[in-house]
Image (tube, rainbow, N blue to C red; front, side, top):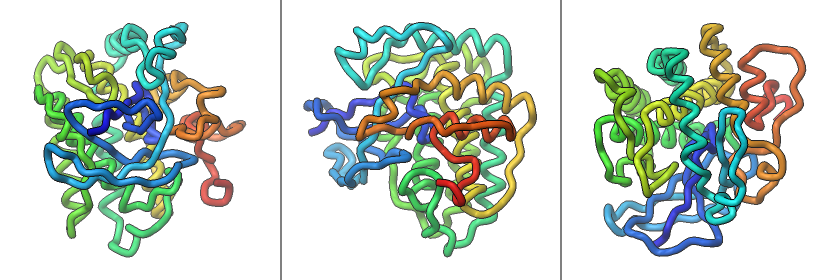
Length: 294
């Protein structure tokens, strides 16, 4: 059995919410592994989930923390490098009182549905801006995250809901179904009053819906850009969405954490001018000019 140590915000896929392996792996009740999206991905591995029997591929990645421009408790991080203090995350509850997080997340998800609808089977082998992932691997990850967050919003607690599995023979339909399930779950009445079981962020506690929705939101802004770049298609978001996206992306820690061999994001890319979307992806280690500058 493997204990998977997770990070509160490894975005994007490079995402905020990712699972990775640490040298401090220990036994636990389940082994739930998912391939991270990283600018620098370590060696690939595969293990079998003893509970579900599924073989799940994984690549190493870094831990990350998140805060809304408030100090990070480094002493806590030293106890478990993959978990940052959850009280830091509650700043996202305040953000939920200022903007409609559910509506913004739905905009990002609908954009991703539209982009994915244009792919062909030949496109699935194409490289993406998301580290060494092909589009097939990226879509598999995106579907798994939709299903995991939907399960959490529906009150689910089984970590196997987050398992990443191979794509079916109908990837567009499979992706749409997972995205629609997610949007329906987030649109539930009084969703922001709920608490989510998010094992990739903190397996020991439930977290507020605002934390989960923020994590999912920034993930799918960036993944929509990943898919658009891979397919050579334009992608546009409303100005309000991008302003919130910049704010959220700025919470992802930079500095030495980005240089770790298992980092989920490479170092922030130097950015000057351009759009807010360029700013977001640059903050998260992607070149806005990919693939010309990757």
